[in-house]
Length: 269
Ligand SMILES: NC(=O)CC(=O)C(=O)O
Image 1 (cartoon, rainbow, N blue to C red):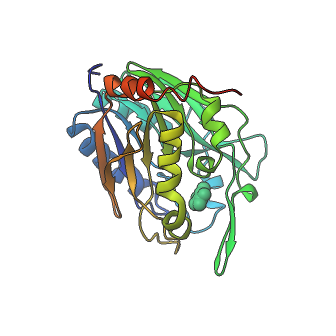
Image 2: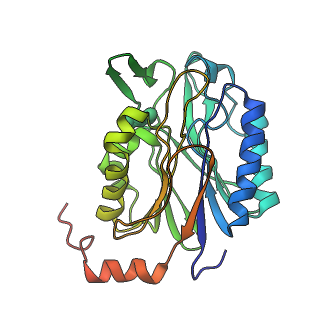
Image 3: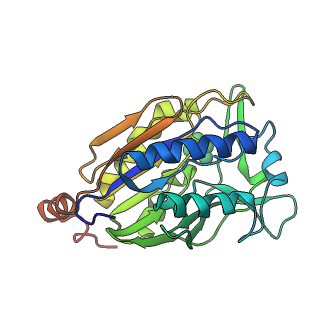
């Protein structure tokens, strides 16, 4: 990874209930991301399975450390020589009817080097839209981050974006990553402003990988995967459909923003 201006990328997908199709799509899009020069890439939430029913992900859950989805992620990281943040996949939990919604991180040799289980579980009821992740997901309990060559990378998942205290708890990061599947309704109202707020208040880059389109289960996701810089400027965005956004992490610019406006040093709590 060039430590001067490393390129990072987010993959946007419109995942279906077919794990096989989603793996093929991710394989193609990861190559597209690597072709931009990206040395760190993230997939979106629920990339391997956006089931017809919420319970479908329980059927496809893998035990931590083994399974075809985890094998696929390790192989992609190794083959492409990238740091791979594996969006989210369902991992088995102690509760037989529910899974953990987990981000796994792999280094360019394909070693598993990080993990974060989604802590905040989405609930929403408005008109015909109703979501209650707590029915099928067990919440995580531990803040997640890992050290990349350009600095610390903080891990979060989708609805976590609404809880700034989680991002503060990650410590000073160069980059915060948000694999997501925001609904179209809530995304239209809140997605960009929340992402920009997390970048501005933590004075770091934010890379968000979204689901973006109409899924076979009827769910419509917002898309707008994006890279935001530490001043809160959107550097790259993809509105809808499958594809890739990428851009550079500029360590000197990050340091300059923090020197010009030392808000992180002015914290009192
Ligand atoms: N889908 C989510 O987890 C979150 C979401 O859509 C929102 O917070 O809005």
